[in-house]
Length: 513
Image (cartoon, rainbow, N blue to C red; front, side, top):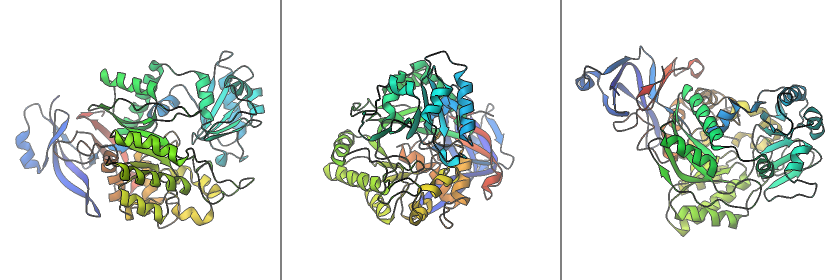
């Protein structure tokens, strides 16, 4: 691969010195063999160039480290772009039912009709899909329609039957509303198992489709945050064949939905393109669907509801301690204040038992001052999703207690508390997974005025923050000699995030432009 010399634009490296976030300007950047070999003045770097060096004049554009999405379900993004019925953005049950009927007509009897993306808060009827309607629309097919948050699922009678679910069925960490055909949290696993595990070839197709799409958005690395053994095998096979379009970090799931069984700790994997030395737990549900575990009742529900805690604390501690002692990073999904209380207590007890790596909390959605302070003391990293402030705003306003709206995904408070913050999208929970859209939301679209963040910390969280949360800060995230040459080139004015566009993505020195 020929070397490359970048110059003639705004070249910025996100940095953090003490509590000050800055964007360090550089005049030029030299790349060779997939890594940055030198940064500095153009006149000095010209001495490194040879006859085959590509001289890339940025023509005034902005060059940054490639974006990192620290929490995105890569294969599910690819699945929605290839084979899954996409219900994101539907505005009414009538539209949803029309799409289901259209898909049913393309299927053979007995084939699963699988879709994702509905959000009752955005539907005209403000209601969830109904089992009786799905029975009529797809009389010969089992139906599974996952809500946008992936914590609630609508199914028809045939799906319930194949999953062995009856009105008496109970499942730890989940709920089944049999008459309506609505499954909450871990109950989903009963249906997923009934569908049959996708083949490795299918997983590989979905992973590559998801990664290629993310690369087009300026994302050069991402964390897939709930990987089971078959999906892990697909990632390893793609890595062995050199077919991963971007770099991936995996959070291996310990407790799959649908029961009390636990996967053993995985074999660690570390290459330039694939990393798996972290595990994942779910402590509670989702805030947008009112299943996150909170200590005050949600608004606008038929009766008092406080969400769902998935684990008893001692059981979570036992599983987490096993991973902690083995040197695995832990990422725990925790959104509601009850879940944050539990997870931070568990993390504190881990460090009391044995030294270990820094751990992370995925989402960190309703953190109060006590959670922020405890996370800072323990060195816990926060992985929130700025784009939730745009796409799930209506849900938060509908369900979250009024007095807690100011702390709902308060990104500013996370930075001010001194946390290591890694930005992400949690796609396909949301439709817009572009980091530029996340920047717009973080900078200009807080849920409560005053909670917006500045450009410098936001860019740091989309680059260095993600690398740090995944243990790769020595390889990527900033523009330093020795780092991977994973870059993004932007058109537009950084001071106006709505003007920004991706001009090119560079991974290991190779551009897609």
